[in-house]
Image 1: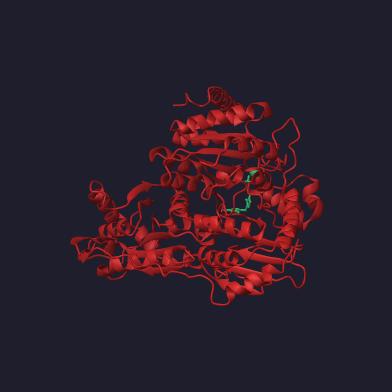
Image 2: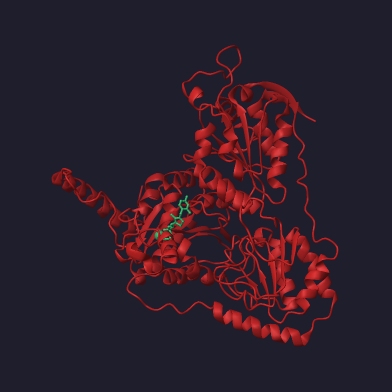
Length: 609
Ligand SMILES: Cc1ncc(C[n+]2csc(CCOP(=O)(O)OP(=O)(O)O)c2C)c(N)n1
Ligand SMILES: [Mg+2]
């Protein structure tokens, strides 16, 4: 085995590359001189992962997430001590909830005050960033965390980090090391990958239990949210569904788990159908139905086959189950299919199930979109359905527009649809970068709410997209604010309560913001804004052409505003009135910019330098 003399940082990068990391999504700080040197040393021979420099950490881990959700290979994410770790923000929650592998590496403040160790303290921040337990910042979300202490163990430690991240259920891991440690020079051989503890199928007897219960059902129902991470599992589920006449429903889908246009697909409901089923088979789902709205009828057998049946990262979690099996769903489906194919189908039962499926499908059919003066979420979804095809990759973070969007998406190919799996907003526009890096030949489309777009730090995302050749199409469902918290309020206070009656929801923080231009300013994306239904299709097609020609495009689609409340300072009470002339000056500048923006939109953004 090859042995080399190099710094621990250089060894770590080489190790990571050998273990399948193509990229190191990087946001540097004072803990990283050894990495800066190692990047430079490895730049020419390609023996380390390629650095993708991210101005914001949200971009770094979300892009690594987007790459790994497709390739299933953990990438490196390099961040700066405690503050960089904190800036990972909701992307940590997303990677953990989505069970997507990633190796996050953060430096620690230097250990020594002075002396001859390279990397000893040189700056004030080395005192103020020295928190006692840095890993505690992200502890509830990491599958494993470790501080590298012996420089000679760097390869074994990284191999273990990759193993931990990749073993089912996959997830992020967190590795730290002090500045002096990364600088140490050691001679150690290159690593050997550690196989990621394989998960098997159903235990003996379980297949029979499940199939026996299914065999008695006239109205069975399969529920799944994330089985589609393995494209082959989708094919197996299709075969099992066809063999046994099983309808498949996808609550809060994180992947394409079943072809949308398959005759046994019955939609995306979370609050319907479960109460009428007489046998429920849940395959990889965290919240198979919303108990506040619907529950299985008493006595209905419910089985869960899941990579994480205990939901170990969650606190309260309670669903009635007659059988719960930890298994790789792909293997489990193979087992179930083998048995199902060995027994002759029961024609009378299949007939009954066909009627049940037809009934569920009728209920899932989206209503026709009425003509209206403003673009509605349904109308935008319908226009997207005409634009999007199965060769593309769609990332959706469209919050309250999802019920309008999902049933209209014409996607059948496993690997064509992704959602964050978590709720840390800002995922899609960054994960789209990772998806494009993973599949450069495909067109990648991010469908986002205006809030989700802002949370994604567009100034970071589109800069990276431009500089690392990852142009994508972003379409913003812009309802002028956050409908989700309004909806949450109205669920708790029916009718909206006094706040609702006054239209004081405090959610209109995208009002007046020229969202697409943020991407133009940061990453020379083509910026479009459209509010007229008649123009929507044309603008979307134009933007798609821009993306296909190699440049990112953002289409800000103006929908009916979710609230008309104007946010800002309260009316002055004893406070000096603002200087009116200053306001006018500001407006003039703004008008000038708006006029430019209008001309950008009119030329399809192509002339925006
Ligand atoms: C990081 C983060 N902050 C706050 C929230 C709470 N939250 C959930 S949905 C939402 C609003 C999303 O707005 P938008 O993307 O415009 O979608 P809409 O609700 O309008 O459909 C917010 C703020 C969150 N999920 N994540
Ligand atoms: Mg919104």
